[in-house]
Amino acid sequence: MDLSWMAWTTPTAIFFAVILCLILSMCVWEWISPGGQPRRGILRFETTRGDRLFVTLLGSAFINLAWLALVGPNLWWALAVCIVFGVLVFVFV
Amino acid sequence: MKSWNNKAWFLVLPVLLLVAFSAIIPLMTVVNYSVQDSFGNNEFYWVGLEWFKEVLESERFHNALMRNLLFSAIILLIEIPLGIAIALAMPRRGWGVSVCLVLMALPLLIPWNVVGTIWQVFARVDIGLLGYTLTQLGFDYNYTQDVVDAWITLIVMDVWHWTSLVVLLCYSGLVSIPQAYYQAARIDGASRWAVFRYIQLPKMRRVLVIAVLLRFMDSFMIYTEPFVVTGGGPGNATTFLSIDLVQMAIGQFDLGPAAAMSLIYFLIILLVSWVFYTVMTQQDADSAPGRGQP
Image (cartoon, rainbow over the protein chains, first blue to last red):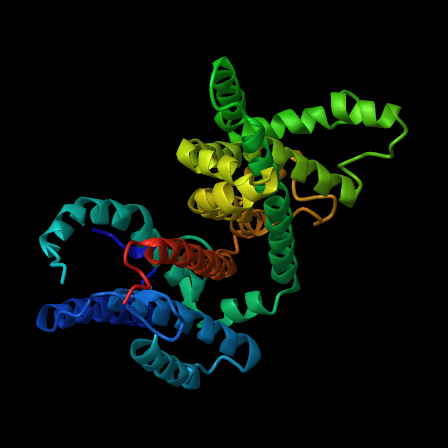
């Protein structure tokens, strides 16, 4: 099957592979340690683990865009901010 | 504790496959395009985040985004109160119900491009009923040359086309209110405003959130009607994000910047949808029996 029209590159393949791994690891986490019941965090609305992953990914996208617009194209520090943001979301939200 | 049967997720698999082919694979392709440049012939060159930076710093993008946000805000400010008012004025029983419902549903049945064509002709100053009448009345109206006229025409057209949706949603919320609430209000001597504020509005809350969500998303993604009526003009006065995106992708064949712009556009819509979804589900959770009890 010719997939050249999709114009795959190594970085974009890694990007999607990481997202897929995150989703799969969430499934494994849930299977090993069920805890997907909604809970209320500091934002005062109910979230499951899946919601928190979604908030992390969406927030990370905007953190990267803001970094790109305000700081520059080197996004390694933005990635660090995203990881901290993700941890905070999973702990407190 | 309530137990969850996760085997039900297998029933979602067919939809997942369908979504994969209709949405996920195209989205992956857009992401791939957004980091490359193409000169046709299926040849691509890596440019990294250049297109994203270009779009984020582009005045053209900022202006189109601002126009979109302004348009959506105006649409919501007009259509939601107007939809509520019309729904409240509609009869609840008798032959008038069917007549009103059919009349309300009519604009919703007309395709977008036909609505655009209708209003494009209707607002013309030479042959259109609206444009000609306004000109004869002494108004200096010309939607092809005047920015304010173009905006007013688009807003009135959208209000004409989509207020019915808000009306029908609000009406469905109103007719589901049990008569006992109104009887209790009458016994208490509640005013018309009090009935609206403390009975009808809370009972319409869920449908109103749906109405706001639908109207925001639709007005934020509007393309066909302004494209047909004004073509994005005069100048770029009614060039919304979707029109700008199509011009960039198909008109100029700038696939890379168009892909980057569409991803940013998608993220904004995703964020707003999530906020509305969270508000909606939160209301359900708050109103669930037992909430707040020890």
